[in-house]
Length: 589
Image (cartoon, rainbow, N blue to C red):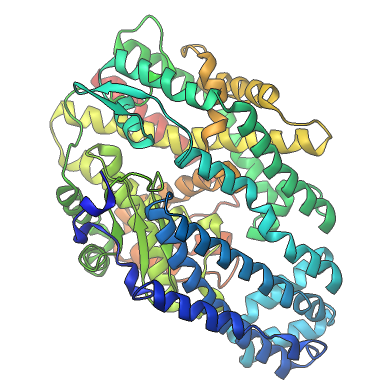
């Protein structure tokens, strides 16, 4: 389907940002001409001047983000449109210019004594910037000279190249082969691949699996080189700034203790025998001599999938999230009615789904909706992101509105858990209940176990490169294949193709992002269970978390909602949730 065939009500309303391209162009040119921070150079040693700089930089950044997001979203509507490729390139160049022009600021402010920075942070004038000042103080040991910071700022744009190349290969030039589907020869797409893998035609799943990975296999050397380029960019920044490792660098930027990452790998690793048990259950349930990777997405209960139209799916999401209250449900409806959401899969459109926020306007959501249970939950997931952004933007000043990525997956997963528990509770038919339990088990498998596997892959791949071992298609595939065996066990037949799965994961180009899905579902299970057992008090605390933005460190924000990731309790509770669902599923078999 081409984009011009989609009804307007199913396209996001990007004109809420700028009415049209001409208005965007005018805004871009005006902002580019207004780039002038030189007047602040050498003056950032008084309270008044630091405050004035913060306000000026904030005003510029707010407008730049609007300009960027318009270009980004237009680009994602159809990656084949070169006009918007050019728009995004121009904006990225401006980002680099801004970084260069403001490179003096943090070194100048960092040169102030700790006592001075502390006094600023306590001053009412800096109420909006107290957390920012605390982070500048903490960052002192990694801050370079002004000249060096200017150089680093200019590296920002070229360092994005690896991810941009991957996106172009993955979305526009992968050259996926044709497959016969429902009586017609059609081009395999990311969305269609997902539909087939969730289907009950095993021969078709196997065929699609082979064809899909063959496309990646033909450019595997290129993809390995591209990914290695991304890792080398991380290593360069780590070395220049003096972090101990790329992982430490990523965790520092999130203000998250390394122990959280290590505990995640530790506790999930401890419970992998449960995953092996589930693989054996799945193999038995499906009556297979061999269980293959293309057998893992299909529901174990036939003819119980929620095949709903988009409108039906959205109504179900609103209904299932009733424990969050009427205000939350009304905001969901507003997002639907005011066209925050881009719904249909179309030619050239970016694959997958995401939510993105525009401060002072509203969030937007990109979907590629298909009539599967997974996509029903994707609506709940992405609207969780959107309303987290909505509450944060509505309650925090610009400087504190953008919450840390570490907590970005919590609200989305709370929605999924609440919706799933609602369905399990209200659907009494044994067949459907068994199906929903299986879905819950697979949610934890894919969001907690699988993302932790990804996290371990990233950690080890970076460690290999940091120790001087070049990354290539062979050692990356060997690493991934070994981890797949560790996490899934002997009940799964590990096809050769699964070793190359690393080559198709977009999030690997946003290094050390994926573990946040795993910590996110861990926190979400704790929060959702508290909402369901404690009611209004838990909802109020949860809204306090949603409204928190980055007003303090993310681990502390989660504690407000009742999820203390500094302890082992939520990790073990999440694993017990998996175990209980597995036992209940087995009892129904």
